[in-house]
Length: 606
Image 1 (cartoon, rainbow, N blue to C red):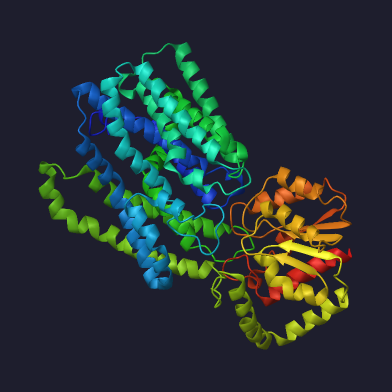
Image 2 (cartoon, helix red, strand yellow):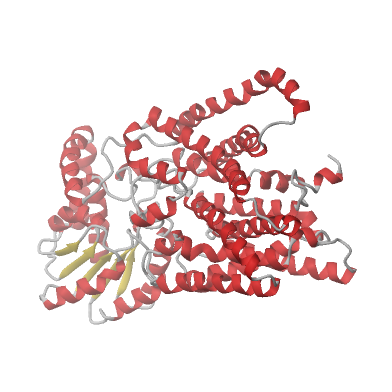
């Protein structure tokens, strides 16, 4: 490929390979985050970088068209966007539906809303309307849970050209226009900060087009004052050096944020995402400049290959991860499983890019190649179609090999159903494991015995409800106040009510954190209000959700500040005990509930 072709796309615009490198970095960060890799806890920030990139490139493209003809062909623009985005996503949705038809058809009705809202690019608002949390949800994760971001982008593509058309006529001066765009971005960031409530589920501001538009607008503002088609590579050595240093520093900050930022940091929703957008814009400005040596480094062949396939890789990786991961996994990440998931994701992305994304995006082939392509089409398409049809089967087989068998008991939706399942399952388990159960009961009785629970109060959620019969058996007279979906922010209210009724004991057990995160300040205030208690026990959590580590770290950190507080490390105690859990990886089967109760009783004695 010669230089002219290398740096010009089919519409005559300059190709910027460094931006493909940034795309590659962003999608790899998102994949690492979805694989729950600890060194990429901020990998979700990759989506924010994508937003800024999209805002820049789309606005740059529209501004070039306006500059050339003083017109915007909106129907052509929208048609190109649909051809670029919809076919590949529709193809992925087809294979996900095929998977469920073959493997678990009972789940398809529950996912109908995900499929339809994704196809019409309103998935983010569908999730908000139905109060589907990105952070605080149980049961099997939806393999389409990542498509909310594509909905925001398509909504931007639909509305922004109309706004641009009006604005370019009314506001001809670029600096003034850029200020207007950034003012709108600031309003969006302000909306995020005002709507977000610390210590609560941030899904509303995370999903909202109104509260995420600032990233797209920051990119758009950059395109107005830094158009790619006006840049020249004749820059002084000093200027080139400044470009590279600024870009490298910006890239370093982005990588550091990906490494260190947690999704539950309050600062993230109070300016953190906005700051990320500006840093991303700085990096984009450097990578887009033809004189940037950093752009050439970021445009190296491996990163360029990933970057050009970043869209297909984004839409394919998440369903592959979700559908090939076990329902319950207390052992931690499996290197073999991760490698297999990556290989399948890359293969599917490459095939989707070559045989779905690109052909639809480019439209009809040139007439001089049409006849030759028709003659060889059947040979060219046989193997990729066959391979793409075979990969879901391979994925099913790998999932069966690498995952634990599914429990016969369905996921617990509420406590009453859990108790019914407990009663039914305990009979079967008692028959299958009679000797082991008898030994465990004997050992528990010998070690723990029965002691009075009259001065003990337990405050918790549905996990404690499952263990309640065993706690009441081991600690007669214990007071248990637990409720489904309860979070740490509800604890103070519960304590005040128990105190008013005279039911708050001198020894208090708090098991909260299963249903969502909380900050250290909130927990510190709660424990401070219990300073007169003789003993406080905090039970940490095992929950297959992003906030698990945040909750456990906060519990450990705060407990050290209070002399009357100890921690029961349920996370460590349950490691390797997948058979104790139902399919949601949180709620406990009878044997697990009994074990859970026993370690709490043991902590009380110690």
